[in-house]
Image (cartoon, rainbow, N blue to C red):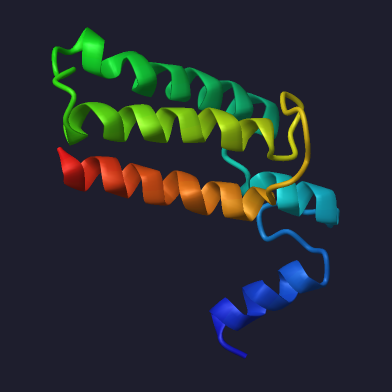
Length: 114
């Protein structure tokens, strides 16, 4: 067994390579999260609102794609956040993995459109 496969085997058996005692599944899952879902939801609402008003704040509200693309993505971000299972949502319709994938795609789209 290679060192890497030994580490994977330790995790599968519930042992954490960073701690002397075994870790629970909850601890292992939590250690992979960067931010909790409540914080992510709050950031989504703030980001959506900023994307909607950005063309006016930064002087590119010309009626063209440079205006409507961030506004569309901002509105979509707010609606998607309202429908994703977290503490600040209204309904639990969109799975979190789908939400995160759309977040990443929106980021790439905004980056290449500037």
